[in-house]
Image (cartoon, rainbow, N blue to C red; front, side, top):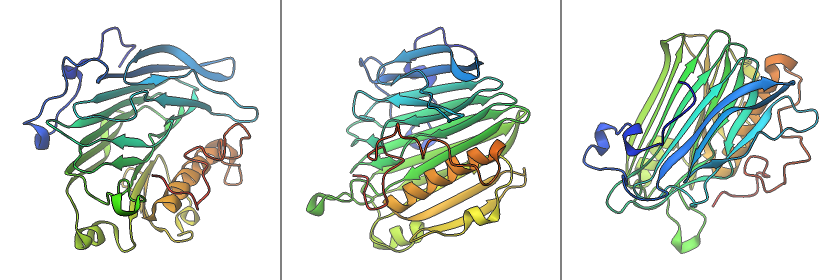
Length: 316
């Protein structure tokens, strides 16, 4: 996967069997696009070696803060989320020695489907010696939405990598207008390969809307629990997976030597714990278990930033 030299079109997206009867907005302006980034190490910092942007996605050059080893790369959606027929493609090539966190500027809002579906697809390659954390942002499925998320990750050599997914119930904190698990259909796929060999694959197909029994079967009790997962290269200290506060957490060592952590619980608590865990584990790659988490202690992130919010604040 090298630097992109052609425009992103509907043909660049894979359509799952569940959405075979639908098509993306092939001729609509600002609905099909994405970002293609080549990260390089230069002068002790991670920078863009190549960058292609096409609305409805944009990005900023990596932000570097004093005392922080990782560059912070934002993906920006000026069209306020994924509309019906939208396709967002994100390609990231992390070169040797790079160190970065790639994240959305806010939650991913998946708007109602009218005649099609929307999709966000990731293609990530991490070179030997690179350290990369990808936190796309909490997914908020609106009433009646149809959504496909697909991520393909290729790891080379001793590459270090973390991928985080957070699935909220929807716009749940709106009193009588709340939309709790009111989506029509969601398909999620994550495949991770190391040296070309498949080491992890996760896929779910959720059909909605969910009644109380369906919610409880998928995510346990509580009024509006969220679900989340982290894929982490290498082993994780068992203490990292002990439940904190109202969340439930499970630690799953994989046959490949990597680790999967899953959560369910109240949305604010899950978001806070997932991000804190991801950035704490990333810091431990070189600084040891006592190293401060990447970015969370930075004075450059406001208290309203989606992954530094206090547990008392809900994602709506």
